[in-house]
Length: 104
Image: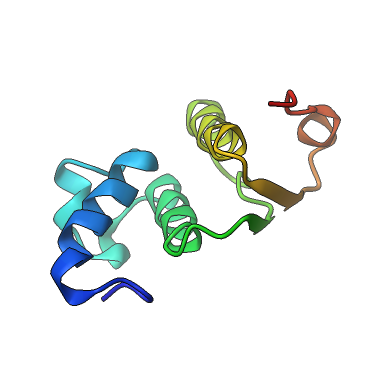
């Protein structure tokens, strides 16, 4: 079930969110408990995007992830910024804290 999404649109909405966070395909039908750490992080982002809020809050969204998955998560967050959303992110990584997302 998706909060705020009509029953008739849930499957379509879930697939759209899965595509946004690169969880379409095999991962789409798996239980969350069977997903890898990076895929669980993507699922968390998809859940945060469910009602398309204008402001998103993330607490260390890339901690413990491999560099490739970390870049992928940042690309997802940048895509949200391009859609006009604001993301507030906490991190202990000075490298990530120094990165400024380009204004849209």
